[in-house]
Every structure is written in structure tokens, then in C-alpha cells.
Length: 183
Image (tube, rainbow, N blue to C red; front, side, top):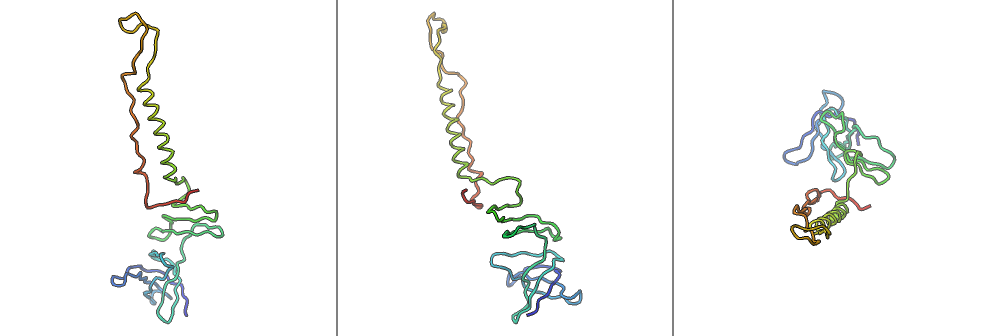
């Protein structure tokens, strides 16, 4: 088995096999080879031009088994899945699995929410609001002042300006494609 460091020239998908083929320099510009990408199941990538690659030659062919690329700083036990710009010089998106159980998607500036818990508390707040609307719309005042043309105390009816129940709905904010574990 031979192990080499290659330098990517171009990555393309083979029209027939749908495999990723990588053209690369092996020992310089006069030694161009075309190799298949071999990665762990379910993980793939298309390395940008000039990405250094690790290849192995076996009795069945030559395969790229890794890329030497930019990585986020990691602590022991952590992993990251990332995408680079087309020059291979800048991380553009990433999923960082930290050793404390946290998963950062694209950064750590804000928090994700548990939609079911948010919806539960939102609906509670909406129900409280609507109950107050009903109380406001139906309230009356007993008064000792004269009402209209009669000289006797009376009842002042509810306000003529009625408050409205909330019809707001947060369900469009729900993502069915991204799921989180409950804390």
C-alpha cells in the first residue's frame, strides 16, 4: 500500500457512477492522477482547488481518504463538520459537537428553543390575555352618581370600545426538520 499527499486540481462528480472524482497532482504538475473519494459512510465533501489530500493506493485502486484543511479549534473529545469557501481558506458553516454535550450550529451567539415548551408557555400567556380581554369587555361599574336623566344611582354599561382576543399563532416558526433533545 502506498500513501501519498496530493494537491487538488479539480473535484467533479462522475456522470455514470455519481462518485466524486478528484484530479490531483501527486509529485508535481507532470504527475496528474484522478482518484475516488473514500469517506466514512454518510459524510462527503468536495475539496476546493489546492486542498492537500491524503491518498492510499491499494490493489483495487487509489482513493482519497482525507483532506488536510482548515479546522476549528477543538478540545479533546470534540468533533466538527464544516464547509469551506471555494478557495479553501475560510470556514463558511459548521456543526461543532463540544465535549460538554453542547452542539453549536454555525456559531454560539444565540440559543435554540424547544418549540413544544415555547408553544406551551405561549398558549398559556395567550389564554391569560384572552381572559383579561373578556373581563375588560364585560366589566360594569356600579355608581351612586345619576345616570342619564334619572336622579337615581345606576349601572354604567361596559365600554363601547371592545378589546379583541389574540389570534396570534407561532406554529409557522416550528421546524420539523431540526429536532432538539429536551433538557
